[in-house]
Length: 192
Image (tube, rainbow, N blue to C red):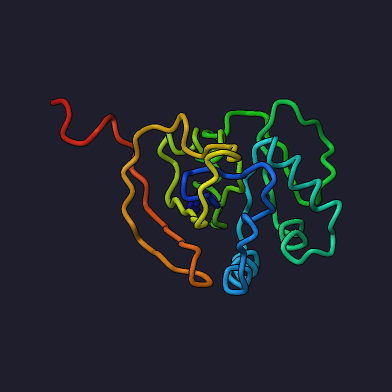
């Protein structure tokens, strides 16, 4: 049986990106980059929504020699979309136009390879709501992008309790926080 990890990089105020800021908010350091490279070398299947797939496959086509993108190109990928058409241009990518929750549940039952999301906010939200996420990991970058931030990560999410299972600091400033998520019916202690 497989496990599913949702992975996000975020600003302290919960944004996934910000207008005018470089990737990783310009704060990636050698420890973090080494950890990313190490993670890319562990075998897993990457899960994408259509928007993130379009973005990442474009980066991979533009920068095929980038080590991180080359590793992502080599690994198996599944993209969930009703708008994309086969054949897909990015190597090792399977297109699924059915229900992502049912597909991921089936993948978890039949495969041993771990599953990890890449971006894909609405896909991650639906997988969390359905209770199929085993681990939830965020890397918090020490910036507040209130004026320029876009892609608020947690808008529309259900209430979720998070049990911390791992933490780490990279380059003296980036915080990794890994949790086991538990979807709640509402705030604890409310109701009968």
